[in-house]
Image (tube, rainbow, N blue to C red; front, side):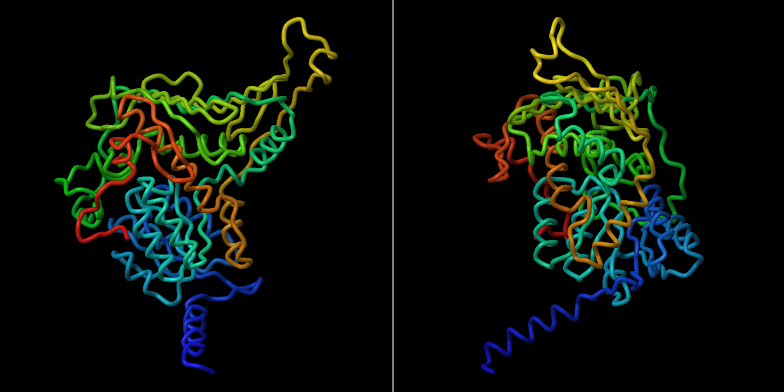
Length: 419
């Protein structure tokens, strides 16, 4: 064996030693980083799976840390720094349930450490972060599932199949949205600030004085940490819309909105509408925090009828053009149809665990999570700029628009660095 062959073999052996090979019946040793509300929901879902062994919990807020440990019978070890958890050799995979601005640093570090990752949606805070996360997952051959659990819902799967097989006729228009009424505004979270490491909570985000309104659930309404309802519920519904259309990305985006009524200190829009142009369809995103109406919207319009699709199920409403005959539309009218919704979370967790063993792509692979996050981020960029933008998905750039391209990434606060 030559020196070069020896070096290649040694490198391959080292890479293999960092990756545990699973048998069908092997238990998966799991840790969680970020055990707030949604993080604990994910944790509880995974703890129900028979092949999961809870090993470690990490959170910068002590109360959440202890609650997550108690959920697993007091067995997991406690950590306040995610890097300590990732250094553990007895952890095969991690749940990342942190605020959005921590998704990229932790997921990239986890992939570097040879861990598989279940990362909550939206995948990233910026488009560049998402690209770096995707690159890290591919470089280290990691299984990364995005927390877009609607993709694992049986009725969503059946609805997409029905539509893509022509069940609604030609589909060229989708309306997605989330509406509620929270006026006069949200209240600061009720928690013990003495048990929160605020500097670590901020991490790569800009330095800010402690503000209880920014922490816990309400982080979603500040640009430093998230993207409002666009990246909260939009990451769910727009993901399904893109799946239905079998498209990677829009060609053009036009958004508008603002924080008009809420005076609670938040920054993201309380009213927002974004129109996406795809090759053969348009998708409209609508969100309102000041009037509910129909709370959850995913309406798909075809030439033979429309479908209303929510987590509760779907309903198909047949129709035909006024005065049209069976001969003129080329086929018999479609029939009314419906299907009730069921559990989304358990099958989504199961997809991740099974793919850890098979090394196949999970239901919401990181690449799909990245593409749907891009769609959300472009909507916010257009809204904040106050004008339309185009998108070149192949080059991952906003062509001919230097100003808009500055929004594709954000600086990280030292000592944190993005690649």
